[in-house]
Amino acid sequence: MSEQRVENVIIVGSGPAGYTAALYTARANLEPLVIEGFAWGGLLQQTTDVENYPGFPEAIMGPELMQHFRDQAERFGARLETDDATKIELSRDGGLHKVWLGDDLRLARTVILAMGAQHRKLGVPGELELAGRGVSYCATCDAAFFRDAPTIIVGGGDSAMEEAMFLSKFASKVAIVHRRDEFRASKIMLERARAIPNIEWLTPYVVDEFLPAAEGSLGLARLRNTVDGSTREIPITGAFIAIGHDPQSQLVQGQVETDAGGYVVTRGTSTLTNVPGVFAAGDLVDHTYRQAVTAAGTGCQAALDAEWYLRDTPFPLEAAAGAEGVAA
Image 1 (cartoon, helix red, strand yellow):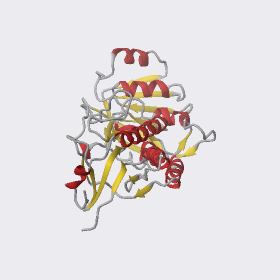
Image 2 (cartoon, helix red, strand yellow; image 1 turned 60 degrees about the vertical axis):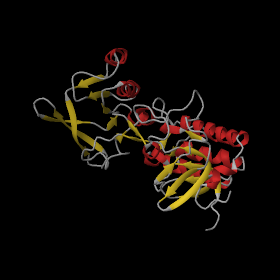
Image 3 (tube, helix red, strand yellow; image 1 turned 180 degrees about the vertical axis):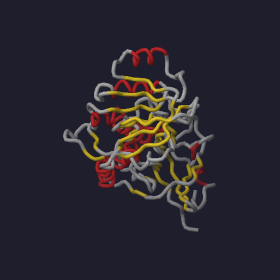
Image 4 (tube, helix red, strand yellow; image 1 turned 90 degrees about the vertical axis):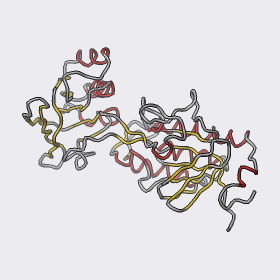
């Protein structure tokens, strides 16, 4: 059996956090291996104009921005594998961590987890077809495109209220659609939202379908009353889904500490997890801000944390002795 290469660092995931971690570790001559996934680029691949990322005053398309991230990391020596990690086995004693791509094994002294999170979908007809053409999952990102337009927010928690209040600065009307008359949002957030004149309340309703206008963008939302089953259609040009996120932590569940929502827990303001040599960044750990610029910032932190770990932690040869194909 040929000797298995041991990577200094494997980065699992891409997006702003993963590619920034790749850039920093590459410039530190750590030759990072990035398992970027087939759907590389993260949620920004599903975004049109990005107007709030520093350095692009004229805005930039989400996929173009992620191509810049990717190219910059590769320029400095990051090695990219456009494949999905199928299994991760983390060593809890400072030994080698294992990442599988199907049957192919990769070994590393450190791992940066940057798998991100996915917006929770309604799963109704028209949602996917109209995503980016009226249906959005981030008012902070897209509200400015709906100036003086009728819009809805779907959700009942603090995030939905926050999104509605931000959107109300731009849209002519914001209707909050929620399946119950009671809301999960905190009292203070509800009071703030109720005090805004152009926020309306549609309860108890759920969205049954999104329908396009003549030009192909969002035109109508078909709602269903959850009590009597009656339906109504409301004309809108924007719909923001604010029912939560699902962190993509399945591959490391039970191996690193996660919170009740599945987000990986890190120590203090660092990216250190409870497993030596394992760091986490981006939307995988962030259920508060969830912005491209904050994800990139934690990607930088994770890279520096990994670099310092490698500098300060001698690699025990005995740790490699039991690994597949590694000569101690």
